[in-house]
Amino acid sequence: MASGETRLDVQRFSIDELEDAAVHVLAGFGAPPDLAELTARSLAQSNLLGHDSHGIIRLLQYAAWVRNGQIRVTARPEQARRFGATALVDGNWGFGQPAARMATDTAIELALANGVGAVAVARCNHIGRLGEYVTRMADAGCIGLALCNSGPVVAPAGGTRRTFGTNPFAWAAPRAGAVPLVLDFSTAGIAEGKVQVAMAQGERLPAGMIIDRNGAPSTWPQDLYDGGALLPFGGHKGSGLCLMIELVGGLLTGMGTAPMPDFAGGNGTLFIALSIERFTALDAFADGAAAFASRVTESQDGGVEPDVFLPGQVEQQVAAERAVTGVPVPDATRRDITELAESIGVDLGRLALHRLGRTLESGS
Image 1 (cartoon, rainbow, N blue to C red):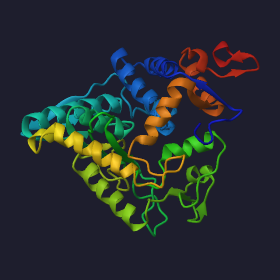
Image 2: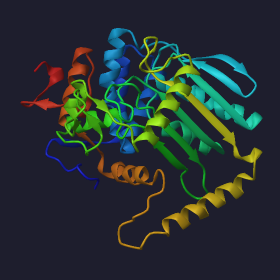
Image 3: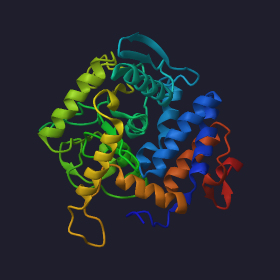
Image 4: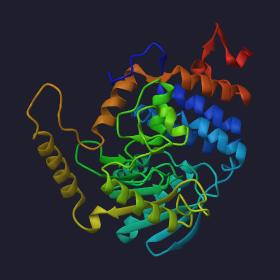
């Protein structure tokens, strides 16, 4: 069982229960059924893989964006431009996941036709977990890469002011006989959503992840939301990578860079797919990747617990466990989502938090 999951204030739910609850909430916002289902599935799958920061807790953020007009619930993405092996997808400020899915599939199509496909996404809200999309590329016989910028919340190395987004980067490659190898990480030391999860669970953060509004190191999640900032991973190296993603994700898409007055919000995103067969035989690559991965894991000392983890391996282990035991959801998160559901007249089913023996939907 993953650390921190056995708690008195946490109940477990099946992936179907989480997805159904998310569909109902998104539909309650006014989203068409197909967009609600695609977005809900993306959120629930993040929970299944252990990335609760990108799971149903995001419904709270999306609700705020719906209310202030950042998310246009009925908007659909469209291809705005296409030239050679490149394309631009316009998210039309709808939910980000449908736009990211369109861009991913377009990148795959372009790569299979041209050897490489590069697709940027403009006017796009939060797209969820990047690993979802590069995995789709790898499943199609491509090497997939993705990056995006986001709102200012990270201080550069040596700085104290929010300047960068968390600016994640991901890539994936297929291997024979197993799921693709998937590397997906925030260039901040910790994703902002994981700070939300820690706060919901009443936990402190590891040292070196955030500073408070005075620039002092802190381990209290609330300090981030009281004017503090996240820190980049790896000092100047993570800071430099964060900066370059800001440029590529922000300026290439026209979304702008996080600290500037013209920043549009959301995720300025770039997807790149490379068709393996245009470079070498796909089977040879996949076999070589599998053999190499085995050699990497064999480099450990041979203890009972593995010491060497491949990219994506922890997520697959968590997913296998949670498929059986369910996904843990803190009561604080359930309470907040239940209150949201009540406000739009939506039934969450078993996910609804009971209070004094009655659900919030019943008017308690």
